[in-house]
Length: 110
Length: 115
Image (cartoon, one colour):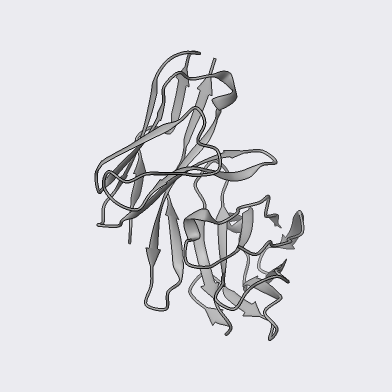
C-alpha cells in the first residue's frame, strides 16, 4: 500500500471549513483513498473514500487531485465534536492491512 | 449499519494471566481483524481472518493467538499477559462495496492494562 503524509496537527474555528491535506505520491492505479477519524478513546470511524473523482457525503467532501498524488478532506462547517485524529489511508483490495500512522490531530476551537 | 461489539472496554489483568478479548459482528461478514494501538506507533495488525476457522498472522502476532469458531465472533487471546501488552485493542470488519472499495468498521476498543 502507498504511504501517506499528513500534517501532525491543525486548528480550525468552529463553524468554518476544515481542510485536511494528505499526500500520497506513490499511489497506484487500483488504490483508493480513505479517510477515517478517531475521537479520543474510541475506535476509528469511516468518513469517506474515493478513487479518482471528488466525493461528497453527509459527513464530508473529498477532493482528489487529477494526478491522484494528493487529496483534501473538507468538513464544511466544523463543530467542536469534529475534534479528533483524522487518518488518510491509501490501499487496494484488502483494507484490513492498511497502515494507520499518526494522522492529523484536528482541534476545533470556539 | 454494521455493528462491531467488543466485549470489554476496560480490563486490568496481572502478568501471566490468560486474557480473552471478544469481538462480535451482527452481519455475515467474512473479514475480521485485530489491531493494537500505541502512541507513536499507529495501528498494528495482530491477526486477521477471512472465514470461519481460518486465521492469518499480521505484523505483530507474537504473544497472541486467535479463535474463530463462528463467523460472527473473532476472539483475541493473550496466553500469558505481559506488561508490554498493555495497549488499546481494536477489532474491525472489512466490507466491500459495489465498486470494489473496502471499508473498515471498528469496534469501540478494549483498553487493557497488565500490571
